[in-house]
Length: 521
Image (cartoon, rainbow, N blue to C red; front, side, top):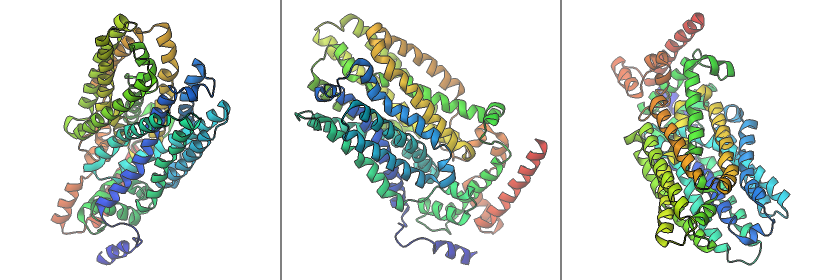
C-alpha cells in the first residue's frame, strides 16, 4: 500500500502547487474571473444605455435598446444547450477553457462593432461563451473545493458579479467623458481581462475528482482530492476517505437515477431535484432585482432623477453596496441555512418593492426632494435584500441538490431556464413601465409572496452536507448505505486497514446493492 501511495504522489508535475490553500485559491480565481464577466456586462450595458455616444451611434429605439441588452442572454441560452454533454465528456477544466475563448472572441467583436448588426452578433457570441462557463465553472467549484469552503466558493461565484459590475461602473463613468465611440468601445474591450485571468489559472488547478472517479481514473481522483484538502498528501486519511465516499456514491447512483427525460418524469427523487433547480432559476430572476440591474436609469428617471452623471454615480454606489451585502450573505449561508437565507432575502425584496410602487405612484412626477431620496433609498434596500440571499444562492444551491449523474445536465437546464426567464424583465420592463408604471413594482412584490411559500414548503436544507450526503435527502437508500468521511476514518482505524482498502470493500458492497436494485427494478 505504501508503494502505491508513493507511486501516485510521484505523478504530481513539478510545477503543480502542493499547498491546498494555494490550490483552492486558484480554483476560486479561475471561477471568480468568469463570474465577474457577467456582472461587468450587465453594469456596462446599464451604463451604456445612459450614454448618448452609444445610443446616438446605433440610433436606438425602445425595441433595439432592449434587444442590445437581451441578445447576450439569448446566446447564454443557446450555449449551454449546444455544450450540454461537454463537461461530462472532456472534463470541467477543458469546458471552461473553450467557453472562455468564445467569450473573449465576442468581447473583441463587440468593441470593434461598426453597426448594430455586428454589435448584436458579437453579443450573441459573448453570450454563448458566458452561458457555457456558467455551467462548467460552478461544477468545478462544487466538485473540487472541500466541504468547509464549498458554500463560500459557490456563493462568492455570484458575489463577484458585483465586482465586475463595480469595475464596469467605474470604467464607464470615466470613459463617459470621451467625445468619441471609445466611450463604449473601451469598456467592451476591457471585458476580456476577466476571462483572460480564468484561462491563465486553469493549468494550476486540479480536475474534478468526481469526474475523474466516474471515468475510472481513481489514482488521478485521489491526487485531485489531496491537492484540495491535504496539501497533496495522498496518504492522508481525509483525502482517502473523501475518495471512498465519492466512489461509493457513484456506484450507488447507478441503479437509482439516470440522466434521461423518462427518469426525470418517473423517478420522484430526480423529479424533485430538478423542480427545485427550476424554482431557483425562476425565483433568482423574478424576485425583483432585474428591474434595476438593466434599467436603473429608467427607474431613477421615474423617481425624478434625470441627470445622466448622477445616475452613473448611483450605479457605482449601488454595486458597492450589493457586493458587501452579498459577501455577508455568503458567509452566513452555513449558519442560517439555504432556506432561511432565501426567505429572508425575498421578504426584504417584497416589502421594498411595495414601497417603491407606492412612492412612484404618489411622487414619481413631483420635485419633492424627500420623496426622491426615499425612492432611491428603497431601490438600494430592495437590491440589498436580493443580494443578501439570492445572489449567493443562485449558484450555490443547484449544484448541491444535483447528484453527479445529473449535475452537468441539471446545471445546463438551470442556466438555460434562468437565462430564458431573465428575458421577461429585460424585454417586458420598459413596456410595463410605459403602460402600467408603478403597478409593475407591486405585481413583482406580490409574486414574491409565492416565492416565500414554495421555498418554505418544498426546498431541502443542504448546509454542512457533502455533495454525496445530500443524496440521502432525496433517496433514503443511498443515504443509508453511504459511508461518511469521518465514519470511514474511524472504521479504517478500528479494522486496522488503510482507508483505500476500506474503499474497495465499500464499493464492492455498493455493487451488491446495485445488482439487487437492478433486479428489483
